[in-house]
Amino acid sequence: MRDAIAPDHAAVLALNNGATPHVNALSERDFSWIISHADYFRVAEADSELVGFVIALKAGLEYWSLNYRWFTERGGDFLYLDRVVVAEQARGIGVGRALYDDIDRFASGRWPRITLEVNLLPPNPGSLAFHERLGFGKVGVREEENGTKAVVLMERATSSPSSLPDTDGPSS
Image (cartoon, rainbow, N blue to C red):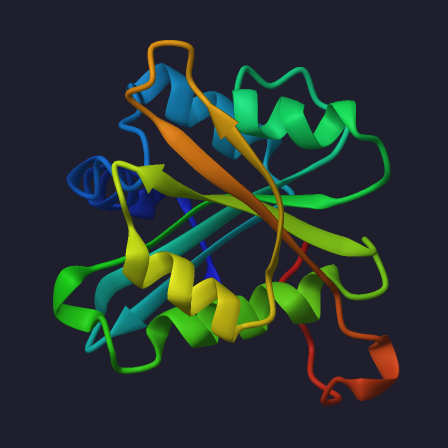
């Protein structure tokens, strides 16, 4: 795990866009906006290859995401986990769990909760089960007007600082 750097951007964007429909595809312009506003942008590597990433944004931005806006409209402070992608060849070996442990360490003491959404339409049962195992609870469902997309909105309280190991987290 490490902070993302500019040379990672092309690989991250390709990994993101290869993971559709579980995350929405991004143009280079939209990707640039998101990472320039990200409070947290980290990558996971295995054998010098980028195998995952996570991007999160704090509350209070003018972000076009309808899911982000859903949390904003309900108030309170949060860190919105905008996107997490693990390369297919790296799934099931703990990369996703490591990314979530890392973001929890980062968010603890800064934000009271981490928020996110998981697709219901198109279905993503593996991601839903993974998030439930990590303690994320369902707080709502949002459907698109045309009925072709639906998400479950989830959140989890961050760990208290005293329960975390004494390690340095990513820089903000």
